[in-house]
Image 1 (cartoon, rainbow, N blue to C red):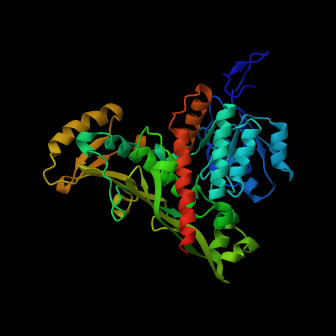
Image 2 (cartoon, rainbow, N blue to C red; image 1 turned 120 degrees about the vertical axis):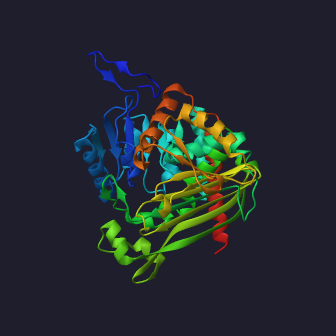
Image 3 (spheres, rainbow, N blue to C red; image 1 turned 135 degrees about the vertical axis):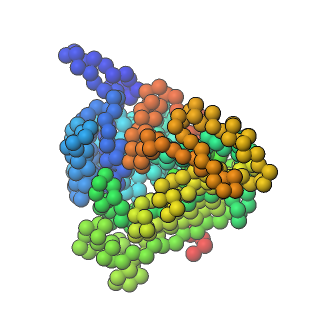
Length: 446
């Protein structure tokens, strides 16, 4: 079956689907979230190749939960192979044309390259590379995908969060934002911070973390993991539609990593294990405390513009939810997303003028019709000091879990129509160069 073929009628009149999904070693719950909904182009039978164990069981339990829910149940049929040669079996049988990868990151880049060599398209959860050596493999993977006419794409869910979308839209309105500042290392033009929870609720249940999630050698340091989303947003919002050349456009100015302290009791709670695995022992400070290298900060210049991204993990934050903050500094105003206690831990976008003579009425007259035309229902609320709060109706607030379907639909469109924007591949390379180079810098600064 052609990877990009249309749905076709069989001899009996029933339709086959143009995409046959293969799930490889689904150790992360993101693999299941891709299947939280059904898609017109994806066959309901999904082939799963994975080692037998708890990671696989949790994945299949999540799929069964989606299939059996009362509202809009899915109807996936998982065909599972669990032999020790699961990867080789996937390659030899080649029962599908798209591989979904979301799990242990230690071999992910190698899996990506070998899947492409076998003729599979690949949709991979972030991060696609967690070391500088992985980045070199990833470059080969993109070259091979181009040579074979295959699609390699990563899951960037944060592009579908409405406040990030609006922040990007308004930054492209010179009457309101002006132009993007160049900033300094002390006050970057773009600054983003993400706070995450190890103990969190996903699809109505407290997520069970695989033990390797707390091992930097397998999950990756925090500086190459969640920072992937933030670096992607810096590129997507600050340089919309522009192709980046990582060799010329990216310079790391400073980078650091630091651990999150986690008690052995907390580790056992989120993994549901009775003992700490031996591979975690190297990160134990003592018999009751683990050091999880989950936090990272990158200061860098992108096309001459100073940017900073920070990721912080706690066992559980005050809100219990992951939060995101973002600042884009312009010559006329700053666009600021806050998600703190004052915002009831809901992301909220503000326009903050940087000049005291900023003409509020003018920017309202410009902004209101443009937003209403593209996003009906979005309203503007004036606060003190000429600050404007963007009020977003609930129908635009899909939530993080729903964003996986949005990413998958984009992937399916690119697969079918071969219309992925020309800037996507160079910018994916720029993104993973930024994170892996920052890791290299941070390791020198022990």
